[in-house]
Length: 333
Image (tube, rainbow, N blue to C red; front, side, top):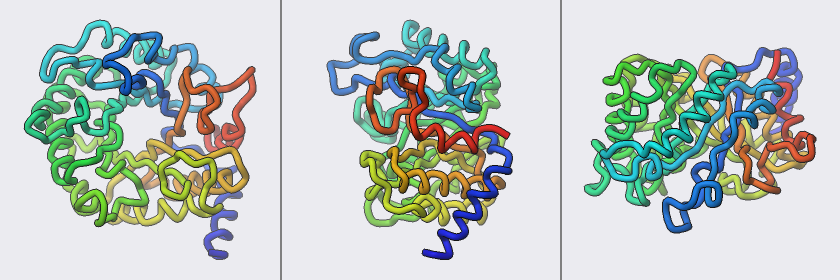
């Protein structure tokens, strides 16, 4: 432990002189809200898209990637049917306006690899339906090089093999449209970096299955999430230790190197306290020290409706949240 802490401190010093990773940004949450109410809910009351103007704050800090969450069922109310014109217009307004500012946008169907709580790969929601959704979405955004395609948020409650097959079907459908956009691929079991090798609770380990998923254009990165509290859920304000960020990422990093693959840390967060500050900066130092396989990171979360949520980076009264101070050394040259 002492050796790891010393290494972490040395990396922290080096980080102040290191160039930032290619992607630095935030997940903007609010357009996926309202799933516990009568669906699809009322726009402006149960859910809302962030404004394009709100991204200016994050861009000024040095962030360049906005991950925008939304719901598959709202965008495509009937499986294999047309995309809903009103909902698509809302999404397009955010995407087009944000990318026009020079930012990149990562599309995030925040669905846990399910449609109306029925997982992809079931008889009710076959792989072909998931592929159809991504074919339609790719056709809408393939001509914007600043748009990235995140297949889905945190697959769960399904065999890893099933998710791997669904992901491959979606990737193949995207590429058949002629889209060349970057694709981010999550693993099963909430796509935790620390559980990539887990064999007890979500099925076959991601480490044994997800490496078989291929992109014919080789423009794909794995998307993993990592929280630093006791159960890795991101629901507790306290982090386990100052070094837990490094500890939970190390083995996955080695897997990337061994398999010659790359990844994006799609969700990272910690409460506003000294232990979490050290844990988060340790994680970011680890990413920068392994820039050959890590393309970047996204903080969880921002968005217009979080209120006093302890992980929100939305400024209050014109003042930065404490965690923004931690991130600034990793945002600009």
